[in-house]
Amino acid sequence: MKLRMMVCAALFGTGMMTAHDAAIAGAADYAFEPVNAAVKNGPESELAVRLIHKPSNKPVDGAIVFRTRLDMSPDSMGEMTAKVEPLPASQNGVYRFKAHLTMAGQWALKLMAKVPGEAETLEGSVVFRAQD
Image (cartoon, rainbow, N blue to C red):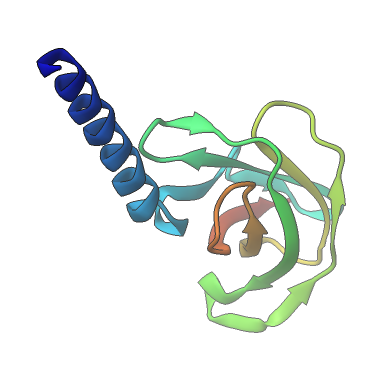
């Protein structure tokens, strides 16, 4: 009987830790980062971002990126925008886009995404430096 109570207590404790970990997980546990911050200026520029789960430092596959905006806000020209289109994934946790960059300078790719199993929407911004 004593062994059974110890096993039940251990299982209960494990369940509580798992529930606690799930309760504190959220959008802040993820980050977008550039694969290469320096990109070619022009109509066929390729931007690639990696989505990382910060606690494990592992790439995240399967996110649905549903909103993107590309502008020059890092250079105080937020009204200067560029068209951005998704491209097929090439590697684990990397999300690629084709952009029509109209001038050299710093461009911010602003993203919103859903990660399977996460209730919160992820929002991030990645800065790229377009060079001629």
